[in-house]
Amino acid sequence: MRRTLLTGATGTLGRALRPRLREAGRSVRAASRSPPADTDGDWVELDLTTGDGVEAAMEGVDVVVHAATAPTGDSAAVDVAGTERLLAAAAEADVSNFVYVSIVGVDEIPLSYYRHKLDAERAVESSEVPATVLRATQFHEFVDDVLAAVSRLPVWPLPTRLRVQPLAVGEAADAVVEHATPEASGRVAPVGGPEVRTLGELARSYRETRGLRRPIVRLPIPGRVAAGFRAGEATCPDRAVGTVTWEEWLAARHGTDTATEVPSTGASP
Ligand SMILES: NC(=O)c1ccc[n+]([C@@H]2O[C@H](COP(=O)([O-])OP(=O)(O)OC[C@H]3O[C@@H](n4cnc5c(N)ncnc54)[C@H](OP(=O)(O)O)[C@@H]3O)[C@@H](O)[C@H]2O)c1
Image 1 (cartoon, protein in one colour):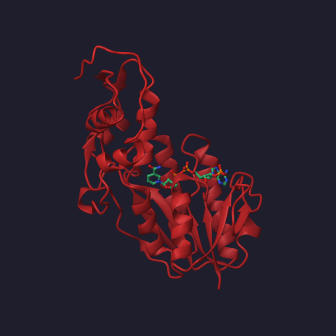
Image 2 (tube, rainbow, N blue to C red):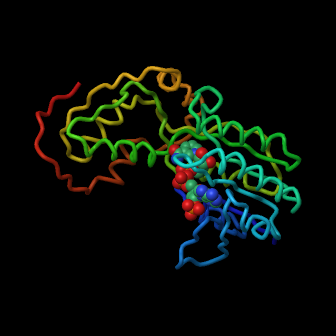
């Protein structure tokens, strides 16, 4: 059987994808710059910035699931040049389906990371390698990370009116696996979480689940990026295929957490 190369296998989505691809009967070769020491199965070292390991990783591969990314790093080098490098090796290896995971709204919201994701989508779609492009909305883990960062502050300054549609990463992975077959599907319908919510609503549920009482203060953010999120450009309400709500995910993730904080006034917008 030919193999499925999974890039970004140590990431949030990659960790959900690997067992699902295996359950779907695929022989998975997992890749990242630093594979875990204690893992089972086929793991390779691959650096999309330098190209180290890319050609070797592609040996015997018919499907690539490309989930490596550098949202807070050099996304031009990793997401754009790295994707082009991976595509060139995939063409050499006669890969029959290059699955690219992208984000809802990358063509509408002028965030520099999103521009790089859009450039990568274009590289994938103009490549000679048959491809599948699947966009997803933000994962619950991403929203959790954002709120965890502000939760250390005595007051939470947040752009409360931004609209997002958080999705369980396992449900995003299920949608990717459905298309990770030897036949490419082209651009497929995006996947979104069950509800479009404001960041303010999500923050209040987060605060409640974690037993915190810090005030949430609306932080007005000017510019087209925030305006795009406020307008719901990062959401796809007609593709609300996820079933796990933010509150259900929070209860599973933080339900037993014991929060510690200094008492606050408890004021809330
Ligand atoms: N997070 C979200 O809310 C969200 C929503 C929709 C779509 N997506 C998309 O889903 C995909 C996966 O996102 P994620 O959140 O799982 O990302 P992540 O958790 O940040 O993981 C990124 C992965 O990329 C690998 N990586 C980074 N730099 C690399 C390099 N130079 N060479 C090779 N591998 C490199 C990392 O592995 P090492 O560090 O071990 O190399 C890691 O496995 C991305 O395409 C993202 O745009 C994410």
